[in-house]
Length: 232
Ligand code: SAM
Image (cartoon, protein in one colour):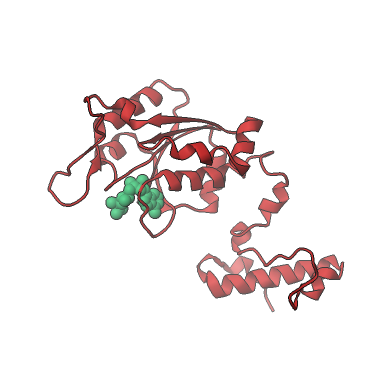
């Protein structure tokens, strides 16, 4: 998967792509990334990438011309056309299903907004999808892009050590994951549930499903469906 990121803060991604799963994905060839510094596409001597908003009001906006310049360079004439994503609080909620879909894309371009966001004409002309990573407002799109790329790339075959682990994570089958324990069996008076030490696979599986459902009902009724509710 090839990912290109347009940002005012290219240095933000130095650390991000040098650790953990994203680094492993790059090393294995599952992920290739290119960072585009938006200031390189400005034409004035101060490399100004923002401007006041028409209509007035507090907050600057990313100018459309540098974004048009970089997008025409990296989207036009590229075949197949890359998917262009703009992370924004106004987008539809990013989800595990979307992450799964993203992991199957060959070439994705992300535009990181800043200040009040980006000129709407950039969205109208270039953007295919707008996603929000939550009902809160971040300073810029860099963290949102990182979250989306991380969630997508861990779904690519070979990136995680054990893909079965991801298959039992939260939001699979519309459940939250159950609690997990490792050694020691007792710590500071806190014991691991006996069933997990029993070696009885069916009972362990049942305990995990019941605790998953319990947590989901208590915290995220919105993701439960009739088909995944354990009866009885
Ligand atoms: N004026 C925008 C609004 O109220 O919807 C907020 C702009 S925000 C300060 C600057 C940039 O951060 C956005 O253009 C977007 O790229 C990114 N951003 C902020 N919150 C986000 C979220 N919840 N999901 C995805 N991107 C977000």
